Image (tube, rainbow, N blue to C red):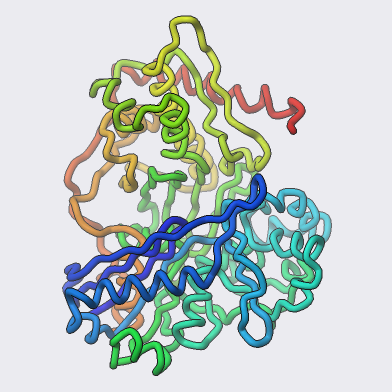
Length: 486
């Protein structure tokens, strides 16, 4: 048996699967985000540990024998979070999360101190990354900074609590901005740019590696007498790719969730920093991946639902099922700033083209179109970085809207495959990595693609109109980016 734990922003999810990759138990526990000031986003690491324990107990309640038979555990987690520990392993302050925007100015500090930053990392520094967070802590919380003995990513803090060891995998560590991504090792130059040292970093592993076993105390508390090995695991998207079988060159998927991700697996390091492409290591050895990231995907439709005081499914259902062309309004979905392709933490959204005739349907349609256009931005940025994407799989809550998928397919000009019902996400990918670490199996044989339930194809009759609308969409950001911001 194998356990996968996925530490998201809003919940911890766990699955148990057997040797044939059949899911035998699933459980989750909620998490809360603290936002003490505008642009801040934090969590208490102890809450992750408590939620993990709740999940394991919930899995064991119906399947105690399955949990007792677990031999390998994989971890997946939200990336970039700065979990700061002192020399005794005590957490020094709440973890600063991936979607925290306070350290946007510190990104410029990194580039000023290390002119080779883009060359070493293959990425531009973003406020969400770990490195600028530590520079912010040094400036604003110097006593905390002076006591930092280890910096761990969220899932790696859980690894520490599980095994007593400090370790991280390549995919998650690539998002710290301290990794030489091509060489898959810590960069002393990038660490120095943030006044950090190697001894403050965890040991690096591949996602398929064995990083240690559960401590006897945790194994007893969790009812796992075999003291299973804990795999390196992966950042949430790299782990999800393992769950979807996106582990060979050119295999791609997009996630239509709170945020949006366009992911493609690469057999070589393929950066495109100029368009804010995330070029990271994969969870599997000798592989990398590119990501285009949209900060507000389904979050945009949920925002509109809140404004209109109408549930999002009701708003989208009112549009019907057929794609006839774009909305008469245009929406820029930069509600929390944006990553790909503009890398601007301070920009905010815009709805334009409004008239007396504009109603809820027009605005809903504009939001759906805008996320499709944002994915088109990502696709073009990935392809400019050397990838060739002919079709994609789709996952995430937004895929429940077939109309939305039809719009995205039409805007991208490629087919979209929907996996059959079942587990394919980060927790499942993590369980697969746990299986590989425990059995020394071949990831190509274990991380296979799921069965496809349905394929969505572009609506050719609307393609030209959408191409024109996308052209107008791409003019919005350059036209407003220099307007004074508060």
